[in-house]
Length: 609
Image 1 (cartoon, rainbow, N blue to C red):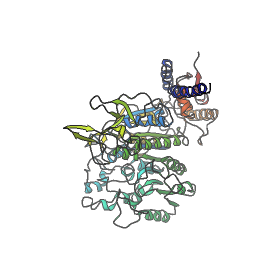
Image 2 (cartoon, one colour):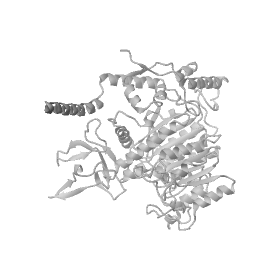
Image 3 (spheres, rainbow, N blue to C red):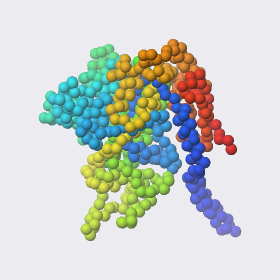
Image 4 (cartoon, rainbow, N blue to C red):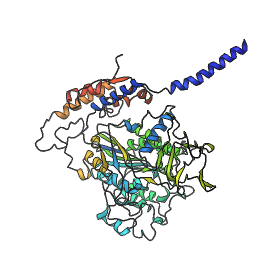
């Protein structure tokens, strides 16, 4: 009798062990997909365009975050939360506007990060491996790179000219390709410090020097990243992954002295605890260098007080410092080590970096006002990673695909690369044979995924396909189709009325505004002097009804009403509710008297049974 009872308990445990995961991973039925599609349509119908002038501009750059990497990151994020992953989303994928960008350079089908940064930050396409210069400058042409006529001012410089504060955050060296396009002009992206110039660069100023001694670099209010060594401020053992100054200058000390001589308060920090204890109100300029070279990968990062802050922590502190500016700010945030992990075909490391950037974007949305802040998320280029095979729904994205080759009868991973250091073949009896991944540590963070064409370590190549761009806030609807990559800089300039659009950012007659100054309308457009006052009153009343906790008083009103509510809930609720609830049918956004209703009421109601 006792044995029978024990057997009963065992079978009960087996039943729950089998059925509970199955229930958790139950697939959606027909009704779910119909309801989901109807919700998407209604959400799209209720998106309104925000024609405000952008007081602030934040651009997040996932270095190497091509479409395939973005998809894998979405799935990985969901699976870290014990979900299938495919049904989830990255924060920026809920933005109301999205487009594709063509990433080729003037001389290459497949680009590098310096030339692409020049495009989306300076509004001009240049040549491969050059930064902050136009196509008149060939790679390594120092005299042409020195010529001011060939220099391409960046959106950061435009923002400074307009009286805005500026800053950047990166997980790479602060002199690396992406941030360098903000402030430097160089015929070679590798000229990060003077010892890298060589004979070819003789007579040119290195990128680190330009950061602290030239405009606009020396006027940047917030600089967070790695790269102490390039600036002559090495702590501990020098890094073999970057250069050292041969002129023995400590550019950080020079930077601090320059600010002190100007009567400004400047701080230099190197640890998480110093970042957290920073006196925001009493600090005019801040430079945080958290490693001799790039900051550590997220999986290696020291999370203690003496360690390195996360990209989320750096982003939030940068916004806190910059939002003191009366005239607004510009901020670049780069998840730069996504790219580095992919170059070594270590996909799991790359996806951890991507998820960390996603957390930074989500955190930023909670402290900015999308009525006056344009937020853009994009990538500079793609990589040659692929998602392949026919894995089952919810299959571990970093694991085996579940398929076997019909030729060698061995399994293979879902993620692979067309080239890279993960090449692992041998010749047996005159035939190429690959290693069996199931006998390797394919779930380890240092696993190099199989590549078709061999390269040396860290030298998997970029991919040449288009990348995505997602946007929310003022003028985000200008992203609406396939664009050239340099278009991004011009959208930022038009939205903020800076740079080439200073005094030339007139909105069309049908534009409506809820905050800030109204740009001059086209000649002959109808005038309504009470328009701004009316809309602002409605917006504020609606925000009060929503119960926003945003310091600015409104939260996500620029987005579709369903997104406004969903972003304030947790991801579980979003995924679970989308297929079962319906958006109320609101009037169109151009109907201004209904703005209060649009902002102030719940936007979800249960489906009728």
